[in-house]
Length: 375
Image (tube, rainbow, N blue to C red):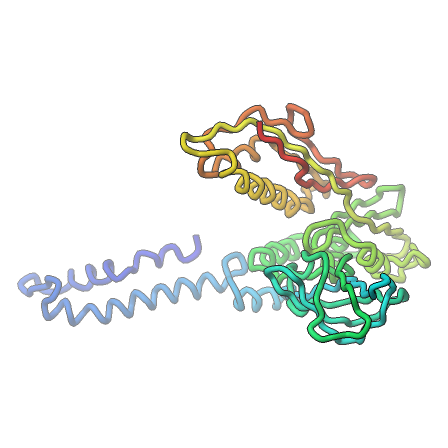
């Protein structure tokens, strides 16, 4: 590992080396004059070697973190994706359930623990339906659905509801995500509408959290681009239309009007939700009840399926996709829960076998937790 050779220079090591050079007739025990004289210098030197190791690590993109990683990737023209605010549709109606006009800039709060604020930013063609923007950047703005409360009184307003996502919010890109994107960029050069150029250009579009690309999916010159939103859920129709217009507007398809090269006919879509019903038998440690572990079971399964969706866009050396749901991985996740002694007889969608997702130009399945049955 880079900088590993500097790890030995601890305070104890430096003190031992320094004291070994003192005449053996001189008292070097802790608390002696020579020991107390050398200790501050060795303490500072140990800190210096630690800083030197961190400086060395920050020199290379494989190990750099934070601002230093930003500096390294900027040398190649890349930049960290910033956090972005979610834009949603909201409807405002009176007691007769008729839409009412709302002032641009009006602010509304969610009625949950997050207490997010959404601001009206744009009207639609439908009376009482507006686009609202979450004032807090990140994926947190994508998750609330339901009633919202006005921060001021508005005439004739009886009900305000937030619903469909227009452009999903996005968290600031992490160091690991940026590093992975950078290494792909330098090792797989985008050029002339090749596979990796479609992946990179599409991923840079606002609202796109993951992308799959299927070349020649429907004959020569055809390209299928499948996108997810920033929450790794199926993208909204607005996001799909935005990506289509940027890559290859349908009215000018194949003419090179968008980012796609001439004679590339691009079709943009999103994945299909594929629920996985899970059934298994659980053996508990003595003293535990099933109700005590149920919440942790649900949480663990949700985490496993989120991880599967995070890896959904990973491709092989020959630019193909493969994803499989392994019962062994699910069982291993559940066995980490306090109180569970064993998991067996697990089935997925009533099948006593692992499930391979369909990932082709015609169908792209996106795994979700279905019903969970504990026997």
